Amino acid sequence: MTQLVEFVDVANMARWIQRDGVENIISGMMKYLESDFARWERFDKIPRVASHTPFGVIELMPTSDMETYSFKYVNGHPSNPGRGFQTVTAFGLLADVDNGYPLFLAEMTLLTALRTAAVSAMVAKTLARPDSTHMALIGAGSQSEFQALGFRAALGIEKLSVYDVDPAATEKFCRNLEPLGFSIHVATTVDEAVADADIITTCTADKAQNTVLKDSQVRPGVHINAVGGDCPGKTELESSILDRSTVFVEFPPQTRIEGEIQQKDPDFPVVEFWQVLTGGQPGRTSPDEITLFDSVGFAISDFSALRYVRDATAGTDLQTFVDLIAEPEDPKDLFSLIKVGVPV
Image 1 (cartoon, rainbow, N blue to C red):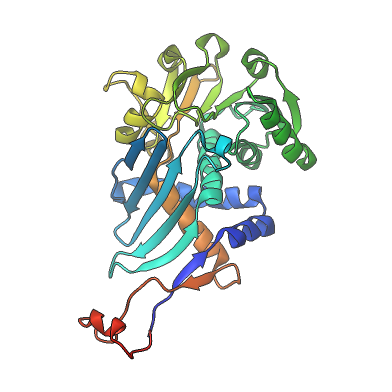
Image 2: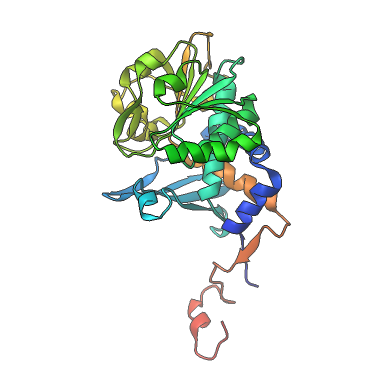
């Protein structure tokens, strides 16, 4: 009997998001993330496997909890929009560790946007000041709406300031979010955007060591959600901001290669966020402390996201099936599948 693999394609991923709503999905995904981060030590972990070219990067992100294996394929090509392509595309897979068979396949371009926002929101719920009401977004690209919705889901934030060098990006941001009830101020400078912000999210696409946010623009007590610095040679923050902040990371061996802390010495102190969730390390310790989440995206978050969408769509017409496993009647006779006259 042929074993088919459950599959959620782009159209059905979009239908699922429309059905359940971005904020509800992010809230549900956060529970899966918190559960998996709390058992962080059980996972097999390596930095992502990256192939860098002058055009961009193609990466594989694997992990396993010794029962289920997952990987994500993802690219990052900053010049793609100018050529009519997405900056990021992705797909991912869950497999059974026991026999190695794939179980579930899904598009992950939309899912990664949800996952990234869910991780940011999960961390901010723990680290940002509880009285936070205003978020500034530096960068209004593909991730920006998901970040805004994630922070509203987790912290109730509806007051936003946004700055982008591309006016069309900020217009798109406002067009998508104002009908959803957000109060949005379009800033003409970064200084204006962050002036009264409790939380600052940086998420730009340029693959370079930029100073999107300066030390002088960061007030005491702010939570910084640094999303855009996510590969070697790409940063967004002035280095001295890190010196003033308590820096929280996902997986240090990967973040030291790809994150904001690539600007620092290898022994620069960081806190692994999973230890905050399990009580091994403190989170925010004072109202004036600057907390900084150096987010690069790690495979365990993709593992959580894939499990969540699989469970949320199980038994519905949002899942179809694909035939990925060559499975002859005799496991030792693979050639039987291609014998002339044998139906395939």
